[in-house]
Length: 472
Ligand code: 5AD
Ligand code: SF4
Image 1 (tube, helix red, strand yellow):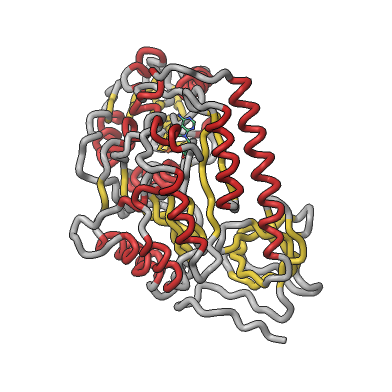
Image 2 (image 1 turned 180 degrees about the vertical axis):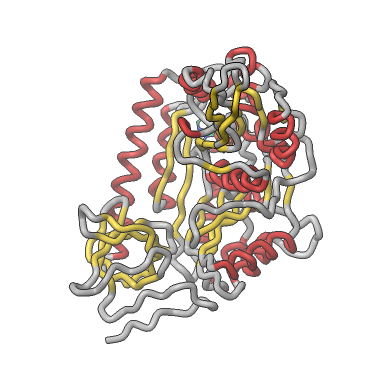
């Protein structure tokens, strides 16, 4: 904030400048992009503020994956409009920015920057133009770039668990999906660059790393050194790194050596998120997923046969154009065949530019809602039974927060399950980011409940992943 003297009125006015507020929607890629954008802005001398009222620049990092994302953005922008006249500047970034482009300026002329994710490395020059008084600055023309938005300025919000983007964009073009249009073509980072960042994070005290990409397992080392499974093992073997996850995988690129790497590398988490989208081969074909139900089930059999108890989670879409009752029934039977640990199910939502927008046989919203309800009910039944296998087990939990209302510590297992637990009386709350063995005393369909194992000591940022020693 600066005070500016106006000689005509002989008054000082407070100028809100070089402060920014950012609001983020969407997936983990977007969340991590915001961490990079924040770091870049801070490097350019901007200060992040927690309240939009205090900010000179308001950024809105948008998502367009489902629903009426564009309308929501314009609605939010209308609210921003009320703040006009206070000298504020507005930037719309992310997937809706890329999708709607300059139309945003037409509908919201007070917006100054519209930029898609593939142009964020040009943010410093966009900010310089903004500061020079320019309006209608766009960063939309870079979707075919070979470059990734890799920056040394990233400001990670969690000091223990951090993301690393290893691949950006998507070349799969599933019929329902906007991602190839909003995030451009696939481009991978070299294994050397990923490993340098992972080692740096380990040195800073991070113990949990999540490798990110829209299709994370279609990562190909531009230097040709490592396969995806080898990269997982290499990150997992960095001293200090205790947990490594990767998301989101595509079944097309899911190879057996990924399961072998998990079996062989203690730090790789017991969790694979492998979205199937539908249990019907004909719907999968219409979606251009390029695999069948049988092909997917074969990958599931590899995971089920692993030495470790690897949890499996999935995304599913109900009501894709042409999905019959029989197709939907195949999705329901798939739930029972795989026994997922969690499923994120969505009603099909037509997205601009995608082939599915023009497909006939659209399904009514009532039918979509009914299918979604049936799917979620069935999955809940399966989870209730499936989670019961953890009863009596002692599970390693990373401490995330404390729920004072319930007097419980909240953490996460290697399988990505929420574990709520209590400590033996007299023991202080374990530090956030520490690891603790917890004995499971009750199971619910969506979480596990337990008690810190007697005599256990919270473990912080160890240099090498070691099994816990429970002192009796
Ligand atoms: N309609 C409904 N769900 C969608 N998803 C992606 N695009 C659409 C769409 N048009 C879901 C998929 C994907 C998850 C991130 O969002 O299940 O895996
Ligand atoms: Fe949303 Fe997809 Fe963009 Fe992520 S990549 S923010 S899910 S549209």
